[in-house]
Structure formats: structure tokens, C-alpha cells
Image 1 (tube, rainbow, N blue to C red):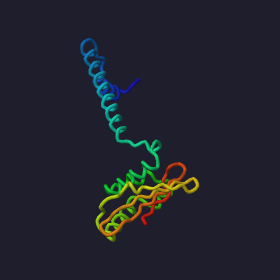
Image 2 (image 1 turned 180 degrees about the horizontal axis):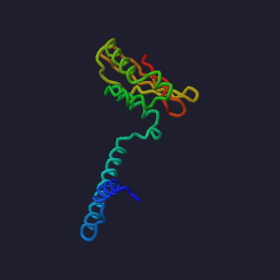
Image 3 (image 1 turned 60 degrees about the vertical axis):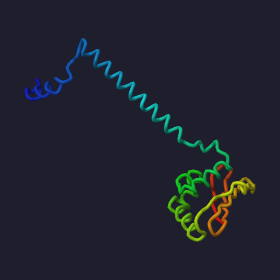
Image 4 (image 1 turned 90 degrees about the horizontal axis):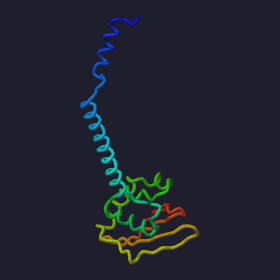
Length: 160
């Protein structure tokens, strides 16, 4: 037989969950359905919005990636640069190191002015593609050289 204290505690716990019927049940069901629909709509909108800002890296050409990297340097957006790197480059040249290199270039060559995509060149070396873009600084013109492997990942980044 169940202990009387345990039985009273159990009934006190179950009491708020008593069976509801009639109008109260219908209203509760409608509220729950409405909340579920609202929840799914919010998730749908959030997923759609996050997808708009996502770049499909596999569908970009190496030339488009080079332009994006150039623009990311101009905006000091180093995370946008490293998304194009292979795993070895991500370890060798993290965002913090890219920031230091760009800062050092500006310190030695003067203020960054522009990059001219008319001087944009591609060279094939075996299975690798090499792209060069001229960056104009106040005191110097420096080439950004990007080397892409056959998968379209950056395996080399040089300023010359």
C-alpha cells in the first residue's frame, strides 16, 4: 500500500495537469497550434535570411574569389579572406596574422589607395592557378599574388 505522505505529494503534483474539457480544451489547442505555426514561420524567415548572406564558395570562379579577397582587404575583413584558404593556409595564416601583414604594408607603403582590376592577371602553372592584382599605396605599388589549387582553395598568398 502506498504511503499516505507520498500519495498526497503525488496528487498535489498531478492536480495542475488535470484533464481539461470543452471550450477550455479547444482554446488551449488553438493557442498551441498558433504558437507552433508562429515558431515555424520565425524559423523559416531566419533560415531564409541567413541563406541570403551565405556565399556558395563552390560555384565561384577563382577570379571571383580573387576579387572578393581584394575587397575584403579593402574592408579589413580578414575572416572573409580566410574562408577561401585550404586547411594548411588557415593554420599558417590566421586572421590575426593577415591583419598584421596588412597593417605592416600600410605602415611601410603609405595609405592604401586602390587596386586596379585592369591589371588583373591569371597564370596557369600545372594544376594551379595564380592570380595577381596590383594594390596601389601612397608610396608604392605592390602585387597581391594568390595561388589556387585544383579544388579552388587558396594555397598561397604573397605580397610582392
